[in-house]
Amino acid sequence: MSKKIRGKNYKKWAEKVPADKVSLAEGVGIVKTFRTEKWDPSVNLTMWLGIDPKQADQALRGAVSLPHGIGATKKVIAFCDGDDIARAKAAGAIEAGSDELIKKVADGWLDFDVAVATPALMKNVSRLGRVLGPQGKMPSPKAGTVVTDISTAVKEYAAGKVEYRNDDGGNLHVVIGKASFEANLLVENAEAMIQHIRRAKPATAKGQYFKGVCLSTTMSPAVKVDVQ
Image 1 (tube, rainbow, N blue to C red):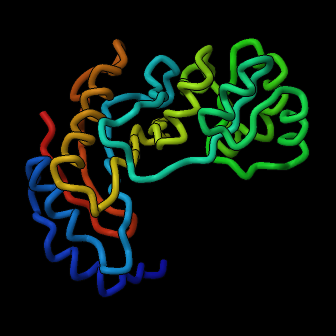
Image 2 (cartoon, rainbow, N blue to C red; image 1 turned 180 degrees about the horizontal axis):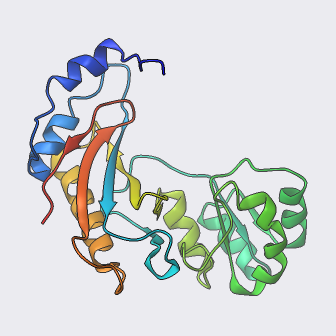
């Protein structure tokens, strides 16, 4: 098995990583230094949770708007009809519509980040499961992308509303901002995300819920933080 090669920046940053857990504020302070003059990376929050991903009632999936956004915008399309088409476009959707938009996506157009839909359109949108499912772009009530208030959904997702879904190891990986953010804004975003996941704890999950939490940037080592 070949040894993973780390760049000089990674090695330099790794020297700053404490062996033990630090407070969230300390962790943010350290991670904010994991950047260069020409590169402003995203800051990632990773949570290892005490859930059994194989149990459907313990799966975590949803979306949350963080207090200070994440420093990025997303391309949003909206599957809707009637007056909702104009509302969606006014809210920032790059495309909005029903049958014509469904056909466009079915034919292979995927130049967007998030798709939202009204409940009335889901019967028709469901045929896109094979196309959008593997991309992680299929509208879903659990993900918060099937909504009656289409304009609000478009605005929130276009502004960077964070979607999350646990992986097979029971981990959640979410972006909480940019390394250039003020430290207090990153702390508040991280706290909001942690509290949201705390409230979402499955009733059937047993034992320690937050088994490990860390912060990192896109290409940096991770800093372990203490979450009670």
